[in-house]
Length: 259
Image (cartoon, rainbow, N blue to C red; front, side, top):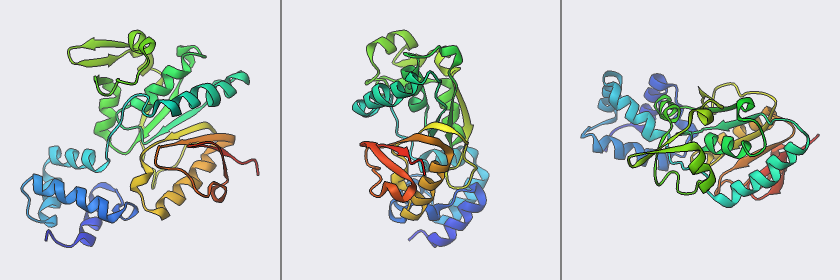
């Protein structure tokens, strides 16, 4: 028994501004307990003390807690729909879409978006917003160095054009990196950007409570333009999309209703 988890949640909130109440408790507690034991720490109180004193363990906690699992073109069939239907429809209007990659992790997702956009628009004009709660992860995203596993689904044309092999890793080009504006952002408490044509938020909300997810979906809707599109992850279908003023247009894609 490591101690009082309720007290730990309050201590973490005070230390990091992260509200663990919004995350599924059983799942999150298991992750935190595993991390504490791995560092040979005996209690929650001791762990909080160590987090205050040791920057490396604080960064480890934020990285571990934010569950960063990402890769380029994850679930390729869904990105094909994004390309050939969502982006193609916007292109017909002759406008460059305003896109927000929410909880962008190591940058694989926003860079995937830019590569798709590059088929239709001048790279020098493309600028998308990418946010994440984890400062260390955003720093990795801005470096843009990826493992072979991360790029396994990247189409060959993009891999050859936008990546340079560097030992066992792949460095993404500056012309792609320059199209993404990375910012710190907490989906639970920070202000959302306005007037977006598309919001991409995939494989993140599964870790939140139902109450937290409901609030996020409502805020996503307000953040979108009229008829804007929300693209969610493989396990995050909106069962009652209309409750959040969305209508399904394809599996994992939802359009903001006009009302």
